[in-house]
Each structure stands twice: as C-alpha cells, then as structure tokens.
Amino acid sequence: MEPPTSPSPTKLKIRAYACTLSARKVKQGLLRLVETSPAFNESWLNGEYDVGTRIGGFNQYGDIIVRHSTPRRGKNELTIEHRAGDEALAAEIESNFAKSLTPKAPRMVVGRKRPEGMAYFFEMIRETPLKRRLSIADAVIEEAHDLVFDDYREARSKLEFLAMLTRLSQLQSSLDERIQKAYREANVRHRQAKVCLHEGRKVLLRHQLHAMSKNHDHVLILHFGKLVSGRILVGWVEEKRV
Image 1 (cartoon, rainbow, N blue to C red):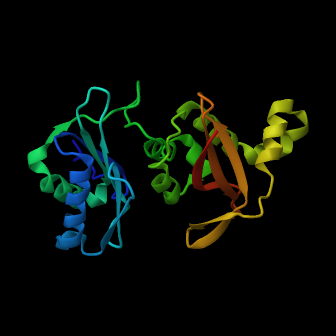
Image 2: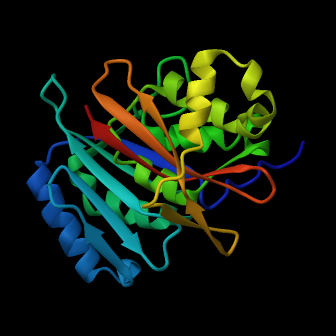
Image 3: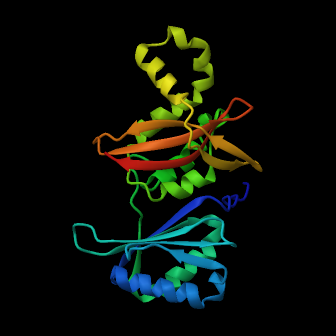
C-alpha cells in the first residue's frame, strides 16, 4: 500500500470553530498576533470590519482569511481559511484563541465534498476536465473568498461556455440565436482591461462574461483573455449587486 501523498502547498484548507469571543475581541487578538509573533514577521493584516480579516505576507502561500459570524441561533462561529503550506500559521492563530474555540465541522455545499464559497468552487474547477481548455488564475481564487455570489450551477455553465469558445468560432452561424448572442458578448474587447501574470508573462484580460445569480441580486463578472495556445485564462473575478 502506497503512503498518502501530501497536499499541494497551495491547496485550500479550512478550520471551523464555535467561538465565545466577539468579533471585536478576535480582531484585537489578530492585530496583536501579527504585530508581535515572529511567525508573522513579514505578514500584514487587512480588513476594515471586525467580522472579516485577511492576513497577507511575503512568506505565505496565499492570504489567510479569518471570519467571525453569528448565525440565527445566536452562537458565534469562527473560520480560518488558508493554504496547506500555511498550516503552521493557521495553527498559531488557533493557539492564540484556544481557550475560546471549540473545533467543529465547516459548512459544506449540499451534496458536495467541498466547503461553501466560490474560492473552493474555482479550486474544484481546476481539477475537472475543463482544465484542458480553461485556466483559473490564483488571483481568481484569492478574490473569490470575498464573493457573495453562490450560484455554482450558473457559474459552472459560464465556465463550460468559455471552454468551448474557440470551437464555437467555427460553428457560430449554425448556433442557436441565444448562444450566438452570448458568443458575441464574450468576444467584445473592453478598453479598460485587467491584467494577469500567467507563466511569467502579462496577459490582457480584454473580455468579460457575466453570470446572474438565481435570485437575480448579484452578477458575477469573469474577466478573461485568450492565450496563444487557444486556451482561455480566467484571470480576475468580481461581482456587482443588481
């Protein structure tokens, strides 16, 4: 029997807890930790509000997101989202609040084996057959932590469409009118293009594709570019409230 392999250091991980502290107390504790702990010597803390904090750093594999929430039941919850390579930093955060935390299972997408949230959705997409024709940049996963949009089915439908974009160029005239319209919209070249670093080169993300949430309250905007290889690079993501 082969020994289990270690996860990639960039793989997303999540820790969840019942928490007896207020959001303000957690924020204050994180400020002290980042300011005083040698482990966070080259890290910094972002986040205007007490309920959510990002910890970035030159020696980290990705941002560490600490969220404090109070569901309807009235009991505080705390989650620490991080990359596998930053496990030691996440453990130090846990240790810092140990007396006030009780580990619990994170909230999972119904019927799936991944936590709720678009960051975990995009990470999952990277492991599907879509990866042969579609690349998801690290910047997308980092930004997706802050998205409210959670219509995974609609988002996947749009990504599947992007993966077919090159092939559709040969079939456009014979396509359904609705798909022809979507194809034209996806090929509009936007003047104020985002830029993504991909394999050491800057790629202009001149194109966009929009996905409407099932409640019609948020629009997910996928910024993408076309690589020389013919593959599509989704290099940035954002949302707008309708």
